Image (cartoon, rainbow, N blue to C red):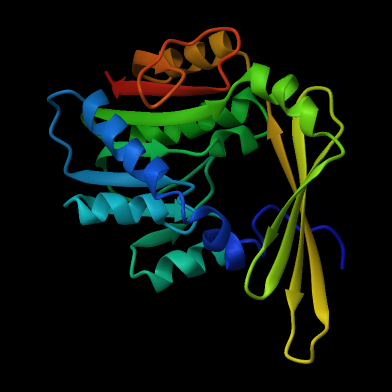
Length: 246
């Protein structure tokens, strides 16, 4: 079997690896509620929602939340949680309704190939926002992609799950974060099936992303380096953007 697209099969075990990060998801909800100030949010759309872990947190806190993703395996898990999800492309989505808040977390936008795709995503976002609505997203920073990940090149992270063994390995790359995920699934006969996915995250210039925010009809209210609203500096690993529809 050749190398698969990102999350072609990984959704089957994603929650066993990342679903336990409840503090992160709850922290994101708290960040969002503080970021929108006095704006009353009722409806929420999560872009690239994956298996719906953040959607569940919003739903439990009384929000009308929907989501979309491109991965069938991730959407299958989200649907098993009785969440309202759609299959859509992050760079050009059409849901057919507007929301008070759009969110896109966990560096999903770094999977887009270039600034043109980022721009198309922002344009679609504006079309789906109610007046004065918010778009909140994060990106892995240029520093993180091009420098911080270098220490992991050639090494692997290992997760031993109930019926799976999962290995994450960072490959050499100058200006991208290239991650190969190898999963070994134990079958009923005791043998293992192996599948490999290749994940590539692009790095983007902060100023270029800020320009695109403004060009597509959004007002940039703030950029932070953490969910605690810390200031961005040259070694910030992640950027959290808070944008409002003009």
